[in-house]
Length: 501
Image 1: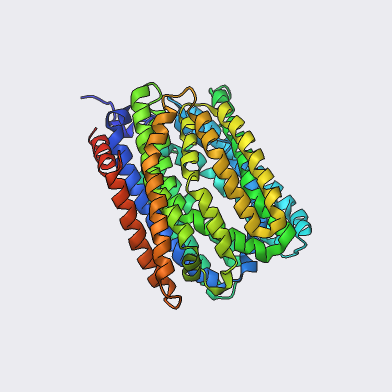
Image 2: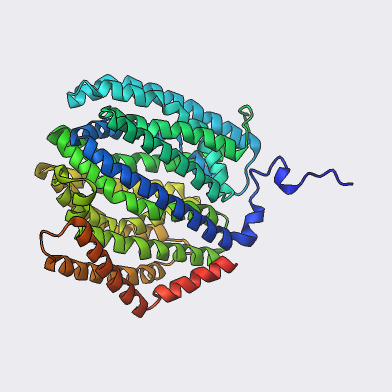
C-alpha cells in the first residue's frame, strides 16, 4: 500500500500552484463572484455604519482621526515591503522562503509601531491638537498585529482561496464596525473611530491563522529570498511615492484649513471610494494571481487582462458618473445636513473616479509581469504631478484641492495606459476599444439622469430622488451598452466562455 499522503495533505500544499492552471478561468470567475458578494455585504454594513456614525459623531471627530491616519498610514505602508505580492507573483516558493519573509514582516511591523509612537508628540504639535497624542499611541500599539498575517494572506491569494479570504474579511469588518457603533452610542466620541480598525485587525489575525493552516518555521539565511526582497522593494518604492501623493492633500488641508474642513474632505473622499473599491478590489485580487500564472502565455494573458478591464469599466464608470450627478442627494441621505460642504468636494472627486479604476488596472501588468522598476518610475512621475495639483488647489480650500486633483488624474490617464502597456502582451488600441463603450454609455446616462433629477420637485426626499435617478441612469446606460460594439451581450458571453475553461 502506498504511503504517499493525499495531495491536500502534503507538506508543500500551501505553496504549489500547478493544479490551478487547468481550471484557472472557472476559479477566477468563482473567486471574483465570491469576493464581490462578500465586498457587497461589507460595503452595505460599512455604509450603514457610516450613516450612523456620521450622525453620532462630528466632522471634527473624523477630522482628528484623519490627521493621525495621514501620518501613521504613511509609515505603516512599509510593514508589507511588497513581500505579499512577491509571494503571489513568484512561480515557485518554499516553506523556508515564506517563513523568512514572515519574520521580516513581523520585525518591520514592530519597528513601525515604535516609530509611530515616537511621532505622537510631533503630530500633536504640527496640528496644535493635544488629543492626537493618545490617538497616535493607541494606533501604534496595534501595528505589530499586521505583520503576523501578511504572508498567510498572500498564500491564500496564491492558492486562489478567495472564499476563505472573503469570509475572514467579512467577519473582521462586521465585528469592527459593530464595536464602533456601540462605542459611538456610548458617547465614546472619536475613540469609536480609533478602535474600529484595531478590533477588526485582531479578528483578522486570529481568523487568518486558523483558516490558512500554515505555520512558519525559523528564518533561514540563504533561502533564496533576495530576488523577492528586491521585487518587494520596488513595489514599496511605488507605494511610498503613491501614498505620499494620495495623502498629502489631507495633511495640507488639515494644516491650512483645520479639522472641520479636513473632516468634510476626508469623508467625501472615503464615501466616494467605498463603492469603487468594492468593485475594483475583488477583481484586482483575483486578476493578479491569475495573470501571474499566465506570464508565459501571451495570448491568454492578453485576453484575460482585457476581459478583466472590461468588467471594471462596465461597473465603475456608470457608478462614478451617477455619483457625480446625484452628489447632493447622496450626501444628504448618507451623511446628513451637517455635511453640506462635502457635496462640492464629492462631485469634483467623482470626476477622477471615472477613469482612475482603469489606470489602477495598469498595476496588474506591472505586478503580474514582475516589472517593479517600471512601476516605481511611473509612480514617481505621477506622484509629482498630483502633489503639484494639491499646491495649485490649496489656496481655494478643500474643494479647490479636490478639483485640481481630479483634473490632474484626467491629464495622467493616457500617459498611464501608454506606459503601462508598453512592451507587454496588451495593446493600447485593444485597451481603448475595451473601455470605449462603457465610457460613452456612462456619459450619456449621466446626462439623462441629470435632466431627470432637474425636473423633480425640490421638496422630494433624497431617497426618492436617488431611486428615480438610478432607474433613469441604469436604463440609458444598459440601452447604450447593448447597441454599441462589444457591449453587454458580448462581454457576458466572453465571461461565460472563461468560466467554462
